[in-house]
Length: 443
Image (cartoon, rainbow, N blue to C red; front, side, top):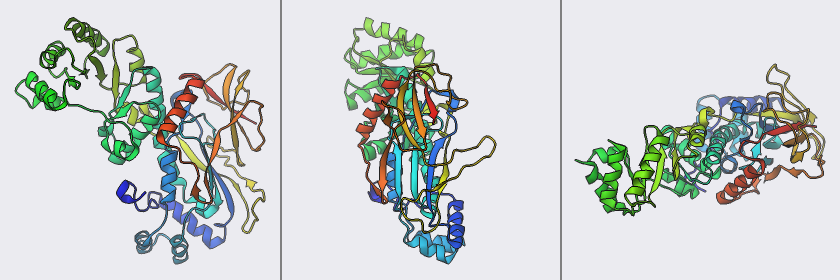
């Protein structure tokens, strides 16, 4: 895909300076060519959530395809003295040529899960840290918020309406992540064009206030969009707004939207009035700072659908998923393919890591493992567990592997459609349950 289709000509500058200074030093010392393995994982789940949702893998793989240094990037690096001339020469032909394995997009994960594994030369792989974390941290935070919200909503559809609460490019990514995690549609047109996410939207309070009366505003909207439209009825008085809406559009009005007040109480009053006016099929949409908790509280209210903005694009208070990208194994310059790499790990207090390349499976265990990650949600067996080992041998007779090959030789080999990712997420979430814990078993 080209820049004209919504992607930049190069993604190489969507990174931190220290990725390039590390490369410069590694090239000078001869360590850049060492075979290396990096893993991306989170040390803990935000807010003691039962699991996370991996999102953004498709966007990341596209970004890695476009990660190269053209004349403009090289000139800027040279003019600003970021790296040496030999490193500029090395970057001029850079393309990632390694291997990537990952949890499938839409998969659930827990703390310690190796959701992304990058294998290649140290120099080529270390450059990918920032872009991998930037995309997967943001998209996964949105996706888990969206999954919890749609889980609370049940079979009532949810519209993503958070574009005005995020930077423009992030708003598009958020709409994609929310859709794969179960949202029905988005207000963001670029997400519709770029990713095929269904779009929805009608009018705001400003539209109503632009007319001499509420009825005239409603009449203008119905004249343009038909009686199947949704009218915003809470600009002045909700009850009178509903009466005005039915007077203008008739009992066949598609829907009304309420954006303020005690939404549960107002929904009951609105439904009763609509039924009284013969508008039994008119849908009731509610919006206004909704999240998974407020939607769950509205479960008994006669609401047909929800609109959610800030609390999905900001990850319901968790603006990133807390992923880190760490070197876990390293070889020596000139090592032949297949030579085992040495496990390496941090020992820093509170930030210790586990060395060695990991493999992960999921299995239903009769009891919660004693090796579950510290700080994980309490769980008694039987439980779903991610079993993580440093051996490629399957550790459980009924376990399924969690990682798939995403890139081989620098080429993307895993490119599911967004609709497939969405269906996969619904399948795995339903299997584990919206609030059931997922624990880590390290072996």
